[in-house]
Length: 206
Image (cartoon, rainbow, N blue to C red; front, side, top):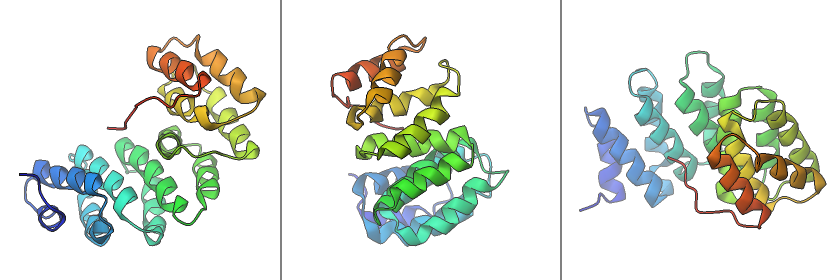
């Protein structure tokens, strides 16, 4: 039987990383805001061990769904630390946009992620933009595409903006998606083709 929220919160303290990870994934699915404080404390403990990157990723993703905007200062500080793992950068970008969206400040959050020049963090932020189907203003779209198009088309960072662009407008967006259809990456080609048809697809982050 699947864990309820109380059981999953308790399991965040289990000695087994696999069980802590399972608990975080369950809380991420439940989306119970009561789990936010426990997830924040669990994540603070988890990031001390570089071996548990998968668990750190799931805890951070769960915090983005169950947490509150008050968690943003910790997350921003975490992703700026040199020793923070790449997986946490991805999940951190996602969580920062999600929690900022609660206060309708996701545009500022996206801009902040872009300003770090951290491709992994930006990739996570755009993952959240795609999943939340956020319609961005033209200035933010331009900033995003400037950042993405300065990278190689072989780079996986093209995928989530190609998904998210289904909800964006303008010639620049159309040109971006058209170029993605010729991408050497099949996942980007599929995402861009769907977006040109106005379809977000059924993609889900790990």
